[in-house]
Length: 220
Image (cartoon, rainbow, N blue to C red; front, top):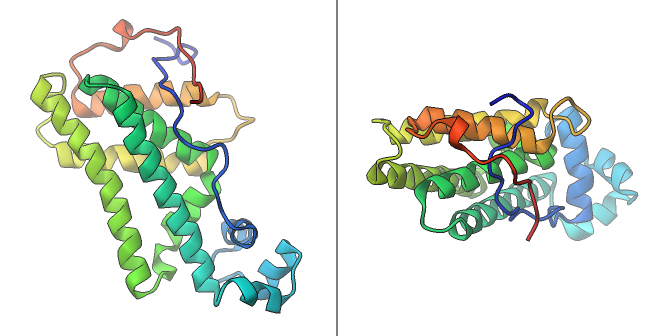
């Protein structure tokens, strides 16, 4: 199978846009370029087309804006991931593929929010940081459970399901750093490549050549 062939693509569960407050959206664009600590409230206000008091009317601090971005990101990813797995049906390989595709789509389509919500964990304080880390662990645990299902069904041979889950999440996270919509690979192709990588990482016994190649990414 070459890079122009596409494995089975499951229905998209992610929204086309994340439900971020307009101020959070403006802040996100600033954080992605200058980082959290390199962005001032004044810069966020300028980007949002508001005054500084206008920002504080909606958010009590810059930290609250970052928390909003991180919370929305993880809520949407976890919700879409679970629905992708559920919609895929009982077959563990289908469930695994659907989950990997969802992770790829999130980190490709929402690269800025994926990048900021990961790299700026260090800027989160106290309970907000603990909550965000717990949400990330929840997503990784979902991957681990689906890998365990594949092991139980005899389709995965890995002896290290926890490490597989960690590796798959990390590989998909990296997409936010290099994928471009105008780049040489379509999103479907990126999904196909990463499903093959994820299957190999889990020790999948089904060869890639056996995968159907006539379906494309659709929304539900």
